[in-house]
Image 1 (cartoon, rainbow, N blue to C red):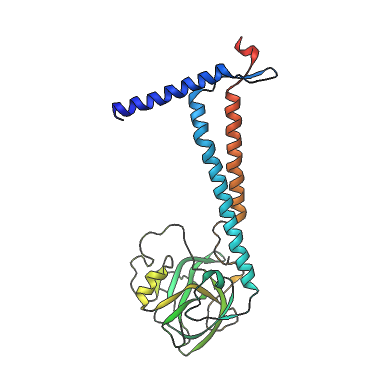
Image 2 (cartoon, rainbow, N blue to C red):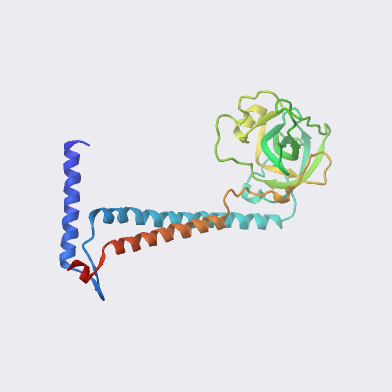
Length: 277
C-alpha cells in the first residue's frame, strides 16, 4: 500500500469512527435495564460486509432451487408425452429430456466409448456408449447400451459386440453425463477404439467421429437384445448433482447465519446499565 493509499484509508476509518461516536452521543437506545453502547468499528465493518453477502447467498440458493424445480417439472411433463421419432433437427434438450424415443439407423461399432468409473452392485465397470447414425443422415445419437464389468486387467477392455445391420432402437432420452472436475481430454491420452473415457465431451467426440451428434443420449430400453446390463431404475434423468431440496436447505442455513450475525452484533454492543457504573 502506497503512502497516499494509506492516508486515504486512514481518513475513511477515522471519519467512520467519528460518525459512530457522534451517533452514540446523539441517540442511545434503552430497552428496560439494557442499553446499546457505541458500535465498535471492527464489528460494525464486519457486519456491514458479511450480512448482505449472507443474504445474497441465501437468495442465490433459492434461485438455484427454483431452476431445479422447473427442470424437474419439465422432465415430469415430458415423461407423459407420446414417443418421439428422433431426427437431426430434434435438438432442444428441454423438449427431449426424459421422453420416450425411437431411432432408426445403424450402430457405428468401430467408434464406441467406455465411460469409466461406473459401478453396479459395488463392482467396477463401464457404461457402453455406441453412436447410432440415423438412417439417411450424417447425424448420430449416443446410445447407452448398458453396463459391463471391468475385468481383472484394466488394460484389457471388454468385447463390445453389436448388430451390423440396420436397427430400430427405443429408449429414454437423458442428458449427457457430467462430472465435477475435468482434467485433460476425455480419453486421457488413450487413442485406440473403443475409447476409454473419463467423461463425455460431445464437441470433442464430434471431431473424432466426423459427423454431428445430438445433444443428449438415449438409454437403451431393457427389452432390446443388442445391449448389456441395464438397470435404469436408479438413474437420475437430468443428472441432478444437487437436488432442489438441498438448495433450499442451504438457503435456510445462509439466512440463519445472517440472523445469528445480527444477534451477535447486538449482543456485543448491549450492556446492562449497572455494568457501566
